[in-house]
Length: 178
Image (cartoon, rainbow, N blue to C red):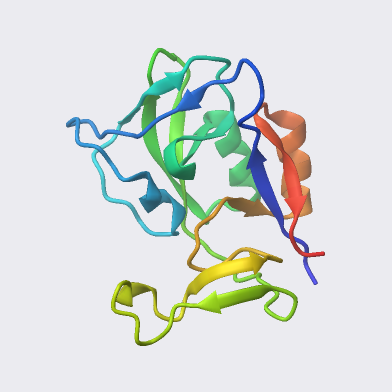
């Protein structure tokens, strides 16, 4: 079985920045959850990303609601491993002159080992969220990415080796397949 790893963002690190909710070029707030569910996002770039806690700019960080913000260096690594599996939306991070983008992953690999995980699905008779029927509702023991959950960024061992050597920001990774 192929192993997958979840990319983590160390939000506890000292002297690091924290980013807020994005706005499009017209000043309209964009829901950052759109970037977590492997959907194409229609918006008016460049997005404006506020710094809610000043600190060291990172190559990779999650902004509000786990929206991935990455430097051009991250994109160079991603292009080596999965050039067709993501799109980028230009972003301007407040008070930072480096080029950043919002990373929108557009490929999902179903890699939850349902035989070793504990979960419930949204029922067919749900009135509160009919758009979620059949998707994972709650997972209490996870081994893999939850299709439809949009949580985190995932990749192969080779990707994380390259990512960890070349980039600043991610706190590490977690094997979710063993």
